[in-house]
Length: 218
Image 1 (spheres, helix red, strand yellow):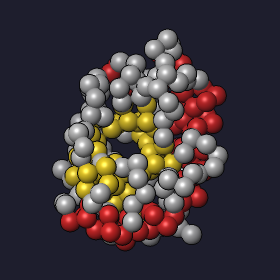
Image 2 (spheres, rainbow, N blue to C red):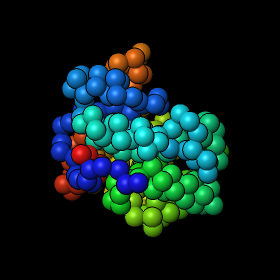
Image 3 (tube, rainbow, N blue to C red):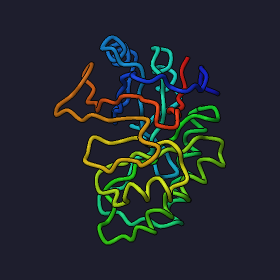
Image 4 (tube, one colour):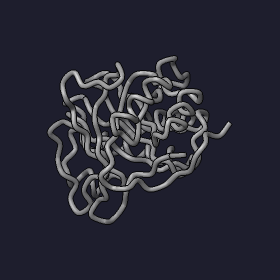
């Protein structure tokens, strides 16, 4: 069953959350009442979606609460080794889960890039990302990248070598994206929670080219 709503470009200056907790009607109402406009929730790298990840039922609850929604894929444990083959596998799994949850084409699906093994080559990270992007794009979605701690790529590599136009800045110390900039900015506050849910905060903005994140909203 397709999810309700339409894919639209996000307006600038809207506050939202990302959370690694299943949301229900009560928590969504608290999030909405706190002034947040959107939510980002997780899907798996594996072929099977575990119980704590985003489901069709949860996504429907989030959307019907008046919150926009985008999915992001879990990253592996810190110290993981990237490769083109792994990027293709993880990207394919991300696209499959997002499609099965019921997202329509065009929505942003985010690659969580962080915690890369320090001995990994920059080329292996670039190959991983571009293989992931290709799988997600081929499935009809708009791939984007969350630039987290120890992503190891430089700003120039992130902009000139990655085949995406959607960038999400983590709350860590990460390089700026030359020419384009970020479309989503994360703020991490210790022990931050709303409605009993641990959250990180995020803010939308148009990048220097006028592009914005693409989310699903009712």
